[in-house]
Amino acid sequence: MWGPASSEIDVTMHEYSIVQALFDQIEESARRRGAVAVHKVKVRIGEVAGVEVALLRTAYDTFRERTLCADAPLEVEQVAARWTCPAGHGDIARGRALVCPACARPARLAEGDEIVLEQLELEVP
Image 1 (cartoon, rainbow, N blue to C red):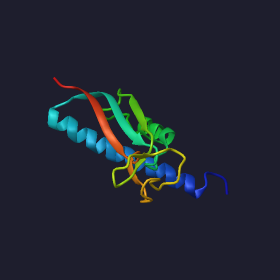
Image 2: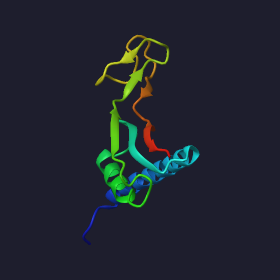
Image 3: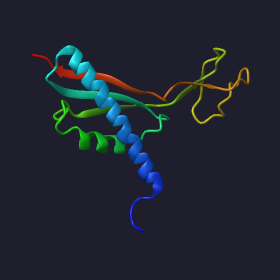
Image 4: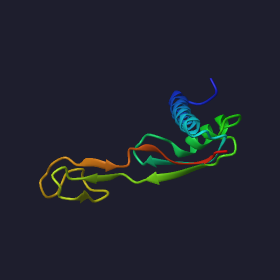
């Protein structure tokens, strides 16, 4: 059988569902403000959020036609994962074991797993 492997289909469906949720959030925000169009969409995506940015862009471009976002480019800010000591001993250096070198407690993910609608540029009459 020819075509993408099952895991590739799952990843694509994951990004499509994220884009659908993003459009739902944008439409709700635009409705509350009486917007007639969206001119820019900016999202912040963490390194360990489980999102393939290229597939997210493809999904966004595929589904934005005939929506308020038809002319709105998608801007993506990627956020590096940052791990910290839960006891307050600071950040864990990248590439190190995810354990605090001072107290041996397991590290806590401080940022890098988020998917956030950061900014919208709306046209409001």
